[in-house]
Length: 391
Image (cartoon, rainbow, N blue to C red; front, top):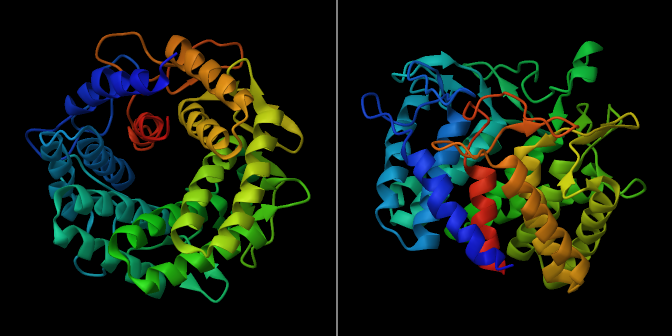
């Protein structure tokens, strides 16, 4: 199996054409919703997370494939970006209407992290200095308006008053108890991801210092050594408030944290971090990799067997990273098994589609949207490009 070439073909023949086809020629940006019936809803809201991830996808694809024409698709997302900017109070809205008017005016740290991620990728691919300056301005805003003495806060009103963090504290069992996490592993992880790229491209020592602090938090407060997992939901003091392991986030973190450590830490510190991320990844695979797929999560001792699209994409990269680090052929064989599962079960065979959102535990397709504010080309597109770079 030539996974590198299969990943290239999947990127070029399945993913890129699908997302090119969602360009909104009338109002700018990209269509924000495609139902399971493959019908785009051009009147659907447009989310900042989705727009930022599309910006990242086309920017990185243009670089990876050396196809300059793809920059025009990245530019479309970049040109729509100002619609999310709150010109009065600063920061970015969660979503806007299809024609670019403010809709959900919440400001969320997670949103700003992904905006940085997309802007840096576009700056690197296009050479547009303004995009990097915008990314640095968002970094400054996060550091000055979205954190306190204990770390990063998450949800804010339009005027930057703290709000309940319901959007990222979204586990049904947690919500049923009326408990809202003040801080989340998800937001911390994607700040690490964004700051890694911002420092790699911009080389600003302030960003490096912030990244080093985040890595310390991940290693010493988020990572549970005794249980070999990342805790997920926290109170103000970064105490875990719920018994849960998110298998997808843990396998994703295992390679994202490696990359951050290589970017910002000393060789000695990097080696230490790479030691526990290897343990983390091995633990996830041992606990949750079954029949070529990774289970979704475990809450209070109960596994959720749902097969989620993004979890499988991150499993591929996590296994590739493990194989590179250890040379153990077991991980290569698992990666090939996972790829067979993805291409035969999770990729939608219908013309004009890409991946299904999920499969139920018995393997039946869940009829969920093909595109919506969270369903994007970031995980599976990045999977293809990581495999092309690593294999």
